[in-house]
Length: 174
Image 1 (cartoon, rainbow, N blue to C red):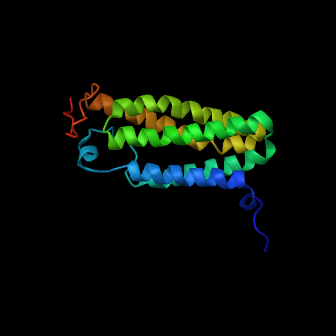
Image 2: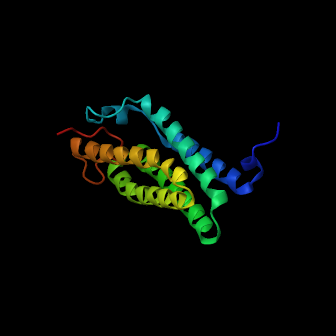
Image 3: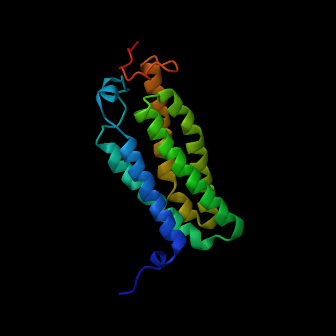
């Protein structure tokens, strides 16, 4: 049985490694603790168990997209894919740090801007290589769009002006 082609390509291994590292760092930064549990959340929020399941599927889809797109791209498109992927990983981890570790949903909401921009960039670059590869990025865009709306709703439900949650105390719902 021969080894899959992507396992012999250093760039493909780097993409896969980057996805795994991003997922691990995000998991490390995410704390479902008393502070988080005390937040008022909308009824439409998915249950806590759904988040790791969906993130696993999303990261697998992104990995498939990158592995499909990379060999079809050349020159500047390859550079753009690397830059977008790295910026996306940093933004993804930054969101988890801001929301869960710093307990600053207001800052996390701002991190959603570069996160969404980099997802759209990944989608466009992958689509350029192969529409099928681009389609594999869509679940990520949908999930982070939902997460952005959830983040904004949590801020609204908990009357969180900048800095209110820095102490780690549960915010007072309106």
